[in-house]
Length: 320
Image (cartoon, rainbow, N blue to C red; front, side, top):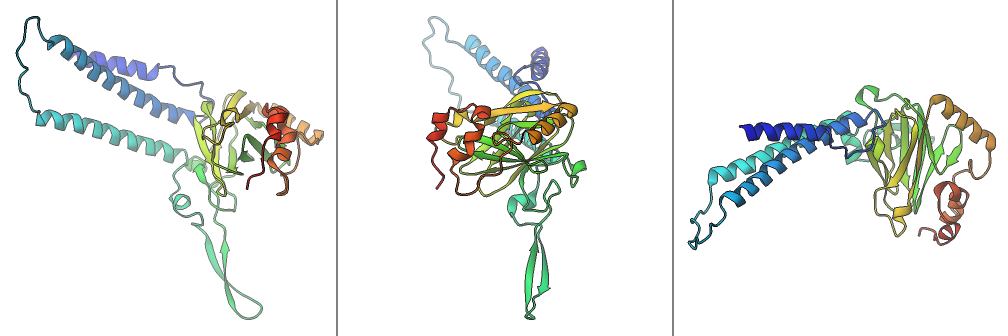
């Protein structure tokens, strides 16, 4: 009993004080951290229990000096095997339900979007001038409130469902950079700038291969998929500079595909937007590249922001 109490207390303490995660800087991080801490608590408890039993068995049941007899012919213990199979099964079930609840609370559960890209569309019958009928398909509502194909990913909290985000940013992942476009202001940048304590929605897509947008401090990650828009919606809470990484192996320069997230105070963010609009230079506010431009041409204005050597950009080939 004392050993059980000790294991429980140690597990609970370490589960809340492991120090393995970077600082949390988003409203969504608390739920993710709670899930991670729970898994750490269970893992440490199981580790201490199993390794403790092994160490005790090695010491207590080791062969004594001069003992040359065979060990007892034990062929198994059915009740024990049922117990150590049932307990992990229950633990996995509980964590699975907890994980699903966190994912749903973050706005990630959208069975319509997951099963059918066109789900939720409204079909209307229209009469054409020649007297024939035609089906018109109206695109469904996006999770963030926009009228286009439903996106996969983490959307708004359920209580905010249908409310437009305060800031919308179109994110394009390509070998080997992230490009951020602000539709409302026309700004395009190699870095992501957002205001603190406001809802931010990223509309993420890939130009060539699979990428994954990941900011550890936000506790959020979302795949960028070619020909399929994904959504990531969050509320940053702590102004600062954070690293944006690609978490999907996307080619030989995958490790260098990173840039910065800058979380500003609302006042500083408005100042940044005004500066970019006023600057109007190609390096800060270029239009989306037309289809006949190569990736090297598209990335060249952003070389300084993305910390990519010009010779590396020159080696890029257009995606076939």
